Image (cartoon, rainbow, N blue to C red; front, side, top):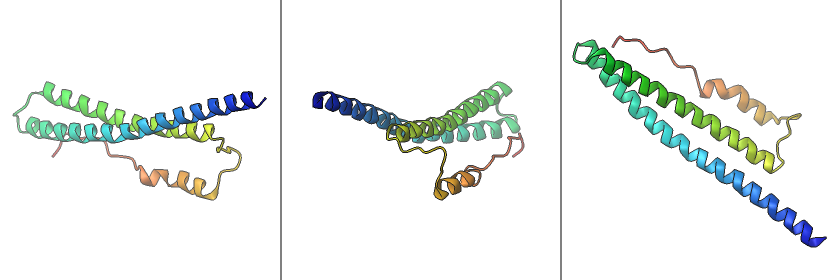
Amino acid sequence: MNAYLEEVNTEIEMRVRSVVNNAIAKYFMIEKSYKSLFAEAENYQMVKARYLVGQAPINQLVDAQDLYFKAKNDALNSQYEFFKELLWVQRALMSVNWAKASPKAKEWMLNVPNVLPEEEDFTLSL
């Protein structure tokens, strides 16, 4: 009986370590994807400025904009993936109680729109 319990405990520990490692990997992907986003945003702004004074063709502007929006999408998805993995960590640790959220958790959820505000749409003006 003790051997069986030890095997079960080992399996649980392996699963918890696996989901924690996945969450850590997703966390570091956030930084990488945001660095890419900032680089693509800077490139897009430079190409847009050149386009508006007639020094760049429209296809360069469209390509730069496409790369920027893809990088932005990847950055937002990396945050989503991290939070999804974080829920798996909590689930693996059996610490998620969906029926009774703490006041701190409720406050955090209500504050998300302030932390991640909507961004304005892009225009082609300087």
